[in-house]
Image (cartoon, rainbow, N blue to C red; front, side, top):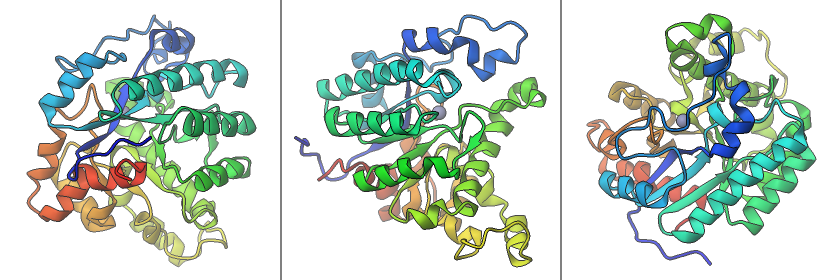
Length: 331
Ligand SMILES: [Zn+2]
């Protein structure tokens, strides 16, 4: 039974959970560590801001939420650390279930403080649909979290259509958060993160737009991590190629940047001007507060509220209203 929630709720959409057991399974496949010649044992505790945790510790999480003024944290796996798309599907499923069951337990313990995005083994679509159903219908999670490609296969591949169809039927949002970029040139200077992740977000968006997924599943809500990366701010080339008919599928029904207004974007962009421009481009109603807990924006509410270009009504929606609607938290 959904708990009644207060009216002006604040929601942090972008918050990760890591589990020791999941990391034991994935540690030799984590992009950031595998740029080094020898994979090392992945540490679960590094990088978190003071008082915040990667793990599922409820008290510490709630304390950090209270400090930041956040009512609800939306739990998701860290795809960078716990992506299992490379693994045999049955083995991956065990890790996905462990994560989903942990999220469900955390939500059950504090239904007014946590919501959760399921993780599923998309290398086997029927199995992914089954786990989606279990996570949403039996375990009470609220949406899905996945990488920007599935082990090198872009998201517009036909084999994923049954999954999109089921997610659309269930009315659950899809959060796309890259698992990391693997080009060895990105090994230096932490570029896999600063350059690679925004590129991956653009790749996911363009494949969903140009591959016809946005048209075929119009009621499916996609939420892009990190404000959708660079693509929304540099769409001129894409538009030019559309006008000149270069490389465009016949199925596309509008200029590509029109489709940008059909995605949602988290506010994890670290620069107020980027947030302002994103709001101008896609509309403030498409923005959703996300901090990238426990390593990202320390004051995600302040980051939105201090922005002078946004109206008070828009800010209210960005810091929680829109997320609550997508996750069906207030119903
Ligand atoms: Zn993140």
